[in-house]
Length: 178
Image (tube, rainbow, N blue to C red; front, side):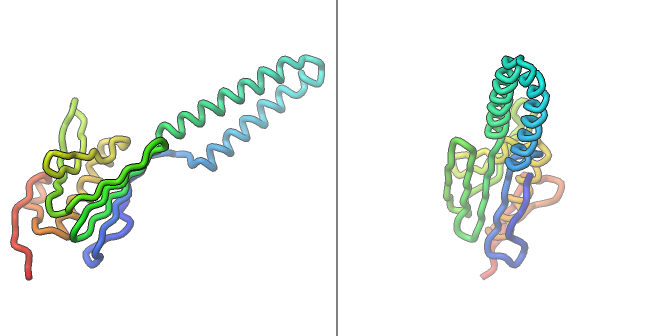
């Protein structure tokens, strides 16, 4: 999911948030797991009361494995990037479950690069030789949307503008007023 939180033509700062597409929040995932647990333990309760106690042990083991798989699946796909652009700097914050990083670059020299690697569009913010990939966890159409939003936000604040709507990668220089 890509969204521009702040920005617009009059705002001094643009903030673009790029989040992984998780259809379930952690609260909803917990609710689904509780429902599965209630049904599983309810089904295992009758045989346990009749003396077949190993069925309850297997049900509890099964729930532990399912809960562990849910946890790994949710944590493995959670990611977020925040790109904050103002007149002087661009701040790129990247967060996953296991890591948290932040880069601050001078905005005047940052460029948006679109690269096709193995027939898949990849989007990078580049400053000289350093590059940061944007939205690696997103589908391709959302990466393209993020690149467009970032390029528009950069163009609003810096001394270059888009050359034309047909070629999204080309920019031309212009003299800033004042």
